[in-house]
Length: 628
Image 1 (cartoon, rainbow, N blue to C red):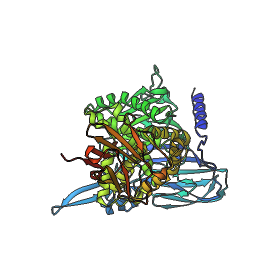
Image 2 (tube, helix red, strand yellow):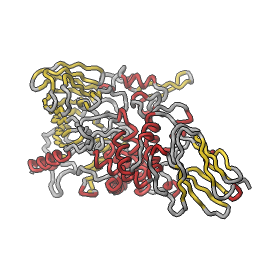
Image 3 (cartoon, rainbow, N blue to C red):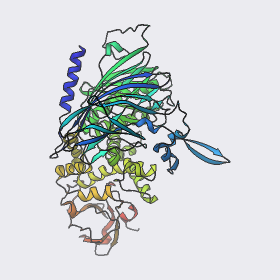
Image 4 (cartoon, helix red, strand yellow):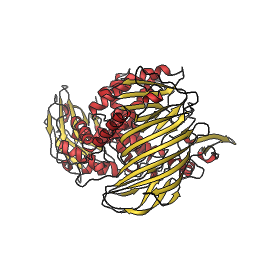
């Protein structure tokens, strides 16, 4: 039976690995891992072997390759440590705060780690096709000078041994979390860096997200028999392991002489592999839409077991919502695992902190689960385009929560994106905004990074709905997923998808919104007695305008001012109200005039953008109301 299951898994992997990116000439590398790992739960040290078959699908001849050694970041003096000491608003989870002579002092938690608390990954016996290769460790990157170049459209096999130590839980990966979870094994193994049409992405690990190579993972983990594991992939030996994974009706008994069990996972067509483990995990399983197994692994703590139980059917609802809104989840399992230091997405699983209220548990699960579509199936380079993943994920998870966990105050659900707009407006007022094209490691402040990637990324989508219509925007998300899943799409790929769906020209929008800090600011400058309206453009970013006029008799009329850069006219968003399409407003003209058939005396009020979806930074000049 195990052989049949394994062959089925490989068959799924082959189907998923078909590169369906519509861009002519597109290619991507392939990295297939086989790893065996032995974990000592007392010392938190582990040893492993790795065999990596690497396929060079590019037209380049590769003379070097690079690997990530993420655990090395958790050492005093690392780039991550120094960044914590020098950034003005360090991550609160990663620092200690205390007072010296009544002054608050912040200290990097990494800077005080002792040798038995640090993280490390040491590489031994690195070979290319059974020949010793030259390696050099530079911080969190392993530089490998190849024995022989990897020619275009050819394969090579790397083999290596590694020794690691799990660091104290500081950020994402680690041991003994604040909630008592023993092992959060994320970004834990030697992982080859991505090479794509832009070249190598051998970024050091300073604290942000990551970029990975698509491939198939075959991982065996040997660990104390009392520990339960939740992980990426499919468990191959359920009936040997037990721990709630075995087939119904089969009882698993382990010999008293057996100290360790070996868990065997296979993860087809993913770009990462993560796992969490504890000797006091409860493991629950329910079946979601399309037969997807939803696993829940969490501490056996009476304080919050009920919330974890109640969260499970909500997770199934979230799966169904994302399937309908974006596209079908292609794997057959997803695991929610307690661990880490907040919430973080990984292939086919997430690690989240567990001591939360039910709304908080569902909310963090909604966000991290949505990442499965926007990061672990649509694998953008988060170091360069973090707003595409975080922003799109925030958008769809906020939308999902209005259905799965509606607020008691219905007004909160009328605009679930209001906080994203307010965060963006706040960032603009600080004068600290940087373009979204800024590399994730190069933001001056964590505040700016967070708002730019999450909030401004969300507004990119909601405002796109304002530009081309909400229906077209949601169709764009579906087509984007369909066309680019299991590849590495770029901002231009999403923009072109929106153009194909709507017929609009949108390059100006992508440039102004993501590559500059230009703002949107339109205002009503004047209304004369005859009913002539003068509008003004104060911000640099051009926009089409929806304008609503309410007359003294409470009748309403709307007007649409096209942006000629779009070469597009959207459908009337308020079909119950008569709309007049006016002449274009070219960007170079600072003012714009049009006339109403009724004079000023009959105008009760006027509003630019009644939807509120245009991110105009000064809404005070968007509104006119007759003085009584």
